[in-house]
Image (cartoon, rainbow, N blue to C red; front, top):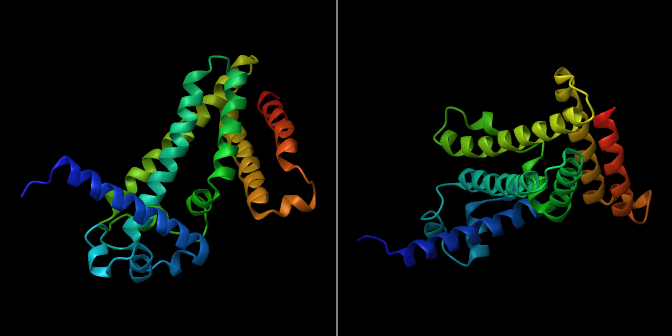
Length: 211
């Protein structure tokens, strides 16, 4: 029997709910703590029924990555396309990245955790094709960020293309560190209002790019 559009929407809704619960479990118990049985309990369904939606926990995990990186890319793309001035665009993209990492910390921690599987871990497996979708969004984020850095450097007559990659690494490292300090609340030991400090640091980052 052919599934109706309503059936397809219902299946997708359940799959989305499964991903939401999986994110909660990974953040609370780590990737090793995510099991199909535990997830089925959270979903109030049988483990057998859960397998109708995802084949295993790795498939669930990769779909979480795809969702996270797609959200980040879409946010950055909207900002990039919505600002013509290179300097203003650069500031907005930096702000967007920081905001995503802080407001969506549950996804960010999973997306950038050093202890979780990456694309290369799935090469040669049945999940390689799915993992390549996540890799595609990751590359688009990098390309978009590199374009933004290049635009800013060119706007101040700095055409050292060879330096763009180094600037990108420096900026990305700073942003990741800022997000990690904020999410771990370690920054609270240094300043009571880190967000206010971060606004100033964004200006410093732009100065770094244009130096």
